[in-house]
Image (tube, rainbow, N blue to C red; front, side):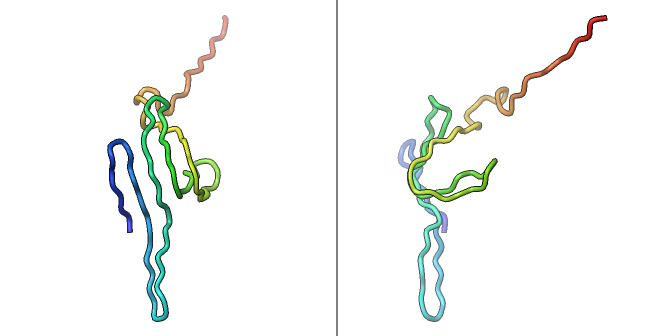
Length: 91
């Protein structure tokens, strides 16, 4: 189950599963967090249970606070920026 609610700039999200068999049932929370954009830092603040992005290293779950850069807040001209390198030869 994926559910959430928005409160002004804050986003509350919960990802959970419910399992039932003949003997028992269980409710498992995968992640549950409160998140908002921090425009001045071009970042997102996350409070609660979640996982890292795993874009470079393996992803891991954590309970706490995360402040992470968000490239989607950058103008298109600055996303994936790499300088142009030119080489000139003197003749």
